Length: 594
Image 1 (spheres, rainbow, N blue to C red):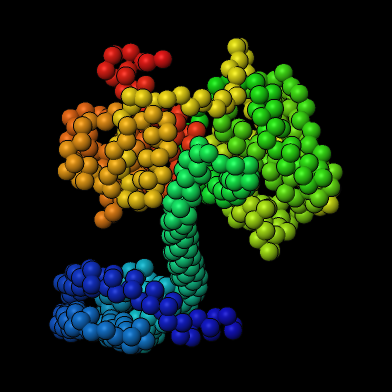
Image 2 (image 1 turned 180 degrees about the horizontal axis):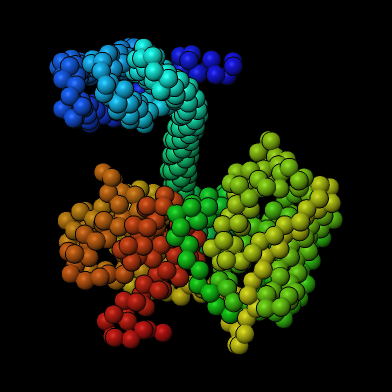
């Protein structure tokens, strides 16, 4: 009983709004259909059963329908609350129920009156059924129409003393009960449906809000990543510029007459410069990976070549710290990029040395199916489980709160992970705190002839009669570059911009050496394009840059120049000059100069 009585209580506003929207949407066509059916039924009854009094009811009914339509149209222009609309609709359906309930009392008494009442019962019942489809989801609205219409019908039957008439009155009362029961169930189902719809709408709204928040967070993260890349690029460039000039001056200084003490100081300066270059090199490697411009050049090579080179380079570093460095000889060969593989292993070995206080480092290869597993094992501090998922993140270091530069920048493992991803080489790690770590890289086993991957330092033979145009807005760099190039036999011309070089009306050089960042926002790529256009030929070019921003690096590749990074290694510059010189000869003779 309590559940049934609750159906008469006002609904919550969101649910009431849902109920009334459907009723208001279907009410105008419902009024039109009801008017046609009601008019036709009354006319049929009036003329077939000779009940002319019913015609006097018809104007009342049509006036009600017309006024109801006008009222709904006027109120539709106003922003009424759901409660106000509910009261209006109660009045609309209640007045219609009263008008239809009054129709039986227009029936003339006589022999055919019972037949007329039976016909009217059918007509009103059909109207109640039609109204049920319109307002069945709202028990109050439906009952405001159905109760006055059918109750008056029952009273009209009871006013006749015939037993048949009384029985029909009882049947109408039973019909009222059934209609109320059906309407109550329909409302309960409708309310539950509305609640589910509202819950779904709220859920969709929350999901949309969360999606917007996630999109905003993703945008913030992407902006932060771009800002980080720009910062690294700017900081790297600003640091590389003086280091670049320093390296050139040190190399030129080493070619002068120095006594033993001076050469000792020079060696220490080169060592300090090399240490700074390593840190800047790590920033460069990470920025190149971040830019997505690292393209592997796979070839078949013997792993022993790489392991021997790394042992010669890093074993003395380990021994200085009292550690044992072991590299097992191997006859295995792999197919991959030897330069990138060497960089991966160097970072892993340096990381192992930095975080090992006693014991040592072991580097070994072994075959597993069609793969070669390269293991770097140490007896260092190890990595606790809570840190293992973060160690491949950039700038993440576990036990270096003082930021000891001897332990690097926290980029080594991030670079390893990025290079392995570039080479599609699976990287795994096993580590226990206090027991050391094992890093393993899996490379494809090579088949067929091998290529010796050892890097051979070039012999700096004179490069005469090569002519080189250097474009750089830093006078110290221009001076150092001129000293170094002339020591290799090059004829040098200097300019701070492409415009100055063209104003000097210099002859077409064999090679362009251009700094990437020039004054007034100009770039080396734009300078090369301007010079080539003026010369009317594609002069081989080298771009030297300390900029690591992804878009900048891609711009360099677009002009087809050889790319070198600051601080510049003289050997790297020499090799680039030889490549450019050979390319120039090949372009002029039609075959590659050897």
